[in-house]
Image 1 (cartoon, rainbow, N blue to C red):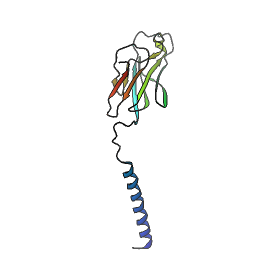
Image 2: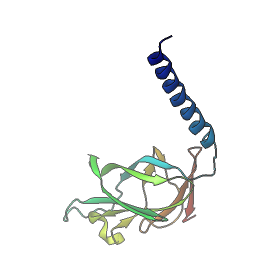
Image 3: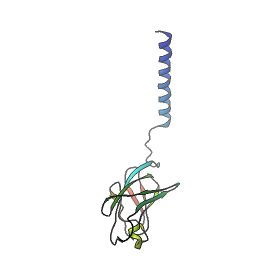
Image 4: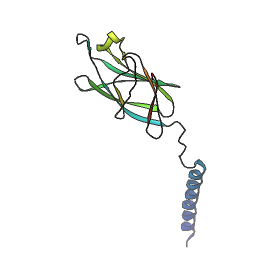
Length: 146
């Protein structure tokens, strides 16, 4: 083997060893209790009474420790809206829809919200916000109101 081939082979082996060492020190990502970034889909279905005399502006608002988000929702069909949101799993998420056509409910609506196709079900008023935890196993726990 020529000197150039030996140098190239040593370089390739060094890169492989560094890659393996870096991978093995971080370990597998199997900690089910650690918060993780998660992109979710959110659907909102507007319920009567509806004030059609005002503008049709619908905004999803949410926050959790260290983050506040807002996203304009896109109309899917009449009184049915959707958008995406970036959250962290395993943390309490505070979420509501600001809906101009629901200002008799103070504009902040927490019913009917669907997260990744699962409706957040709870007793209580339409107005206000809902709090939930999106667990790493995909389950969603409504923490307030109960």
